[in-house]
Length: 305
Image 1: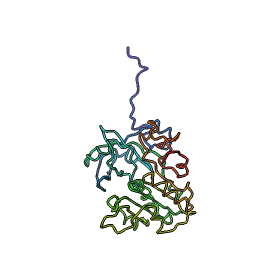
Image 2: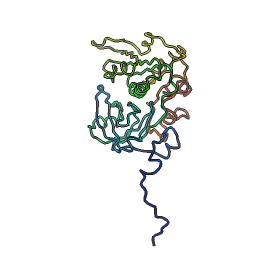
Image 3: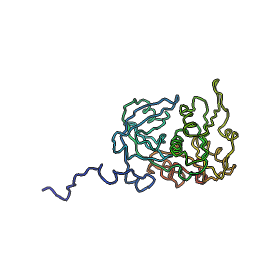
Image 4: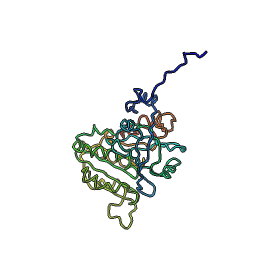
């Protein structure tokens, strides 16, 4: 005889309370109980350089598309079916619920497979994960943004945020450097950032080509071209970890407190949920407690950079 105690009533998981709202992935309890995936379609692929491409993703389900929410500085886990997944920073505007933009560099197994994908292909994302840049706390202050190489990808989200709330901030400057002119990606947006976002842009390269007419040198040399009030300035720094010491130590010497400089350690990301322990620095899970940290915290994390 069938035991009725084991009858499980049918239910639609999409109508459960946890599925009707965007989970807060900065709360560890929600990370542990909700590992939500979103099926996405690649709607466009934009070549940026020989190594980087911009992928525009659109969540397939309309309800999930509206629920997906993120803040500048957060990242997601992007899965290519059959190949695995990789942590990728979100490079789009947090106010845009139609498309999610991610900048991908061909670097490993998953990203190489993604470079073979065509428009219309289906991938999956999880997230968003991680801490964010404190954009509200910067309200009424100057914002100094320093990006090196691929660091311009996570910097786009706060740039979009500032463009949508430009009256919140005073002077906004973006310092952007790369090894070669061809590695200055998103150059088609330079004019938009300056004219629409009212952002003062400074660029520099280490190895110029014959057509380059701008500054040449290390990114810290861009600081020679202007002055700023350290009491009224907050800083966001994205790029290779070796750059953090030179840029942040310079800003510290100019009087900007370390707890008003913010860096992203997203390069340490792996599973995004604190389960694999590969991102740990001491007892700190970079994926759960970061990837955005103030520089004071980074200085107190041994071997963080």
